[in-house]
Length: 351
Image (cartoon, rainbow, N blue to C red; front, top):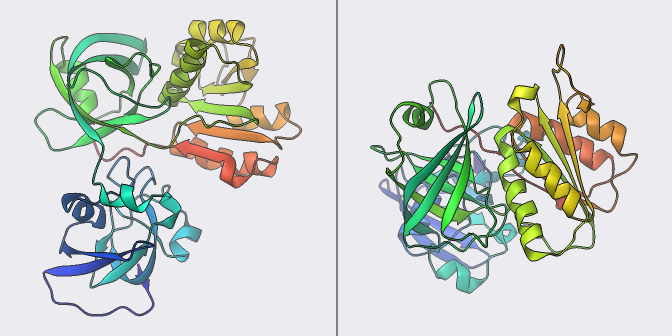
């Protein structure tokens, strides 16, 4: 990707200028802009760090970079407008990036990475579905984590330098442990480790909290749309609402293929019963031959036939990228302002 006005530079390092701060730093060949910034005591917002979540979007205003990240995290229109992912973008010569959309103060930018590293101990496994596991980690060092309902952590795969991103499912007031929901992927590195080697008492290292999928204060009604393991951040949000005792108008549409793919249904039904204004709508896209009295179809179908309009709503989405990609235009077509649509979509890094 390039911007007009590219200049040659000495091979070995490139100068990266960050707007609106006007600060420049050196980025060695082969290193991403994000890596170089964090290493030199600067802070830029990030999430998964492998080009999948889109948290580190910035606009390339001058120069060239290579490395694009996933096609979901950056749309073709964004690419055409010069948007890049700083965790994937590697400078090819001097360049300038504008990070104004990150809404960082100058103090935050210069304060360095505030994301913490935590040593944890596996204290519980739970089989949620045939291909989804619950994993509870007790925080050992430090012993607590301050996070917002809806955020996620990066989990380091033992014996590797790789991490995987998982949303935190427990409420923030339970600060001495984190509950994760893990989708078992065929051939997945951490999936294989969890299936065959991970045991209660094992130690894992996590980094966080990360992500901007936090429930904002607003007078608007909230529509949450979850698919698969994407239910985790909404469990955290609803558990948080219960703990605080402050009602909020929330509809949760939870999509799965079949009955065997649903989990935490009893708890969600309980939360909907005790929290004023909360409505829980599970939906199955492939319920053929199963006793199912609930909604049928994809979440996009359910939303389209349930809501004549979504004007005045905030929308939060979490789940497979294909689900989110299909759902966003449905929401905006029904009246949700694009600025009020927020989501985390974790694109698998690699097997």
